[in-house]
Length: 324
Image (cartoon, rainbow, N blue to C red; front, side, top):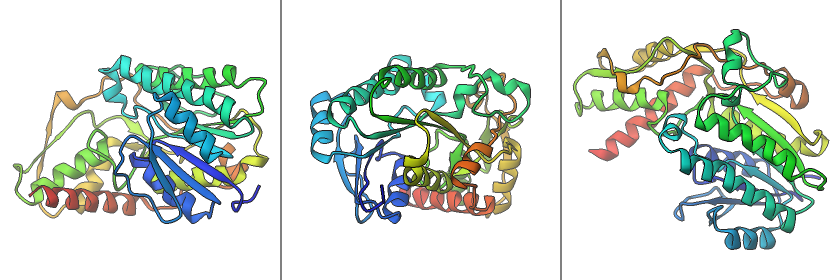
C-alpha cells in the first residue's frame, strides 16, 4: 500500500508526541490523516483533520472509525507521565488499558483489515534494566509501577483480543524522548522552565532538582515521530506481532543533562536538592538495543543533542514570556 492510499488515524493527537507525529505523517503524504484527542482546540498541520473523541465514548469512537475507515491506527493516547500515574492508579488503568480495549474491540467491528501500531513503552522492561546492559526486544519485561504494568498488560491484551483476526499488530517500545512542547512533568522541560524563569527574574537563581545520578536515554521527539512515520510506511512488509525498541542505544546521566542546559543559560544559578522531585527507583541505568529497528527500517536518531536542548529551552522561554 502506498502513502497515496493509506488512511492513518492517530489517537492522542492532542498530546506532546501526537502533534509532532501528525506533522511527520503529513510530510509523508498519506492519503488521509485524522487525529483523535480530548482537546477540541487542537491545531493540526495542513492535510490533516482533527476530531475531539474520547476512547471511553464507545458510540463516538465507533462512528469515527466507521466514517474514516482507517487502514492504519497509531495508538498514542495514554496517561503518559510515570510520576503522575503513580498517584492515579484507577485513572491510569482506565486510560491505558480500558481505552485500549475499547479501541481494539471497535477496530474488530469497524476496521477489521487495518494495522494497529501500539505505542507501548520502554518502561515495561523495568527490573530487567538492572543487568546494566542495553535491553533488546527479546528481554523479558519486568515492569515496575502502575504506568509500566498498564503498558505491559496492554501488549498482552492486544495479542489475545486480536488473535485470529485480520488486524495486523506492531508494538513499539520508545525510550525517553523530549523536545519543544513537552510539559514540566518531565525532567528536561522541568529544568528548562526553571532556567527560563530565573533568566527573567520570576524566581530566585536556584534550580530545584531531584535525583541527578540516574542514567536514561534521551531521544528527540522529532526523531521518534519520524520513526513512527517510517513504521507506518513500512508496515506492510513488517511481520504482524513485531516488537520494536525506539532507542538510541546510549544513556546520559541526568546531571550531565543539567550541565548541558546550564551552559545554554543566560545567567548563573545554584542547584538545590528538592526531595519532592526525586522519583523513587531502584533502576539507575536504562538503555535499549536499537539493532532491530535499524535493520528493519533503517531508522537511527539524527537530531543533535545540542539542538534538542536548545529548542527545548527556547520553547520554555517562549512559554515563560507568555506568563509575564
